[in-house]
Amino acid sequence: MESYEQAIKLLKLLFFTELQGTECDQNKMIYNKDIVILGIESSCDDTSASILRNQLMLSNEVAGQAVHKAFGGVVPELASRAHQQNIIPVVDLAIKKAGVSMDEIGAIAFTRGPGLLGSLLVGTSFAKAFALARNIPLIEVNHLQGHVLAHFIKERSTPAEEPKFPFLCLLVSGGNSQIIVVKDHLDMEVIGQTIDDAAGEAFDKCAKVMGLPYPGGPLIDKLAREGNSKAFTFSKPRIPGLDYSFSGLKTSFLYLLRDEIAKEPNFIDNNKADICASLQSTIIEILLSKLKLASEQTGIREITVAGGVSANSGLREALLGTAGKLGWKMYIPPFKFTTDNAAMIAITGYYKYLKGEFASLDAVPFSRIKIG
Ligand code: ADP
Ligand code: MG
Image (cartoon, rainbow, N blue to C red; front, side):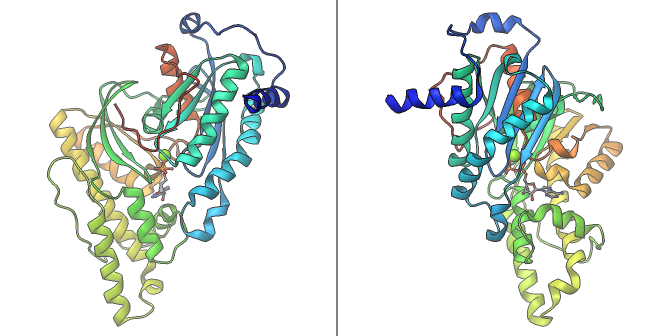
């Protein structure tokens, strides 16, 4: 108990001028439609903080973690330690860049999961302490829902059009490959998902096999631009319905390299661009085939894409091409909203705020949470 009180005292000294002393009136807050929200994202290896005034993004700061480069993947224990170092400077910068005062921040939204438990714990603890010390509502956000709602973030420079409900979202990231029917901001239904690896994992694991550094997705994207996508063929899954599978592709990729290297030791170096282009086009084909089926089955032609893999230039091109042919209205997010960022957490927080969906101070992070 003593250490708890000491921690609160320290927090107050560190960030805040004074506490209001009264319980925050959450009912009153619901009717105050003009709200400044601080969003916190710490689910994996990016520490991010963002300030939104309603839907308008005022700042979105992201601190990456170079510490994992040497390990070829994210090391959970190192990630949580780096979050601890980054979180205060990142929040501080986000508030300064937004040009808002501490008193203007009316709510704090944080990623509760899914993600790495140690990493989530840093953001969750920070958000709870901030909410307590500032006497403002705390809002828990599902990271995946955040990716989907990134399309609703407004920027001063680019007045992006919002997708209309219901729409389909192809959510493709390092940990997820899902097709989601989005009926409303907070009403989503997953109608297809991977039964093993995610699309981002397929990019990253195949890149690792080729000796490329982590994360491999962006590098494969870059190299693929110079290559022939028909140079090599890899096996494609035959899974019924709208589910995905990428583990067979990974094995087929591994076997091709093993067989070719046995014949030509420098096979990877001599064919890097062609290997990347062929792998990328196979992943895109798999993703698109199920998305087309989902659109056919649901009759929905408002289509969005979200998550880290949606930064892929080949996927963007293929989606736009398919949209042109099939009469889809396609929404592709700006690059900065594809990978993990706190603006998507803050926008989800905004819609939850409007509905009065607040978390209590005993909220704990979850490494696995589903949408819906
Ligand atoms: P998660 O939240 O599940 O960790 P993110 O949304 O942060 O995932 O996305 C990270 C994933 O996106 C990684 O697997 C990375 O390789 C992939 N990625 C990022 N940019 C690209 C790109 N241009 N092409 C393909 N994959 C990419
Ligand atoms: Mg993510």
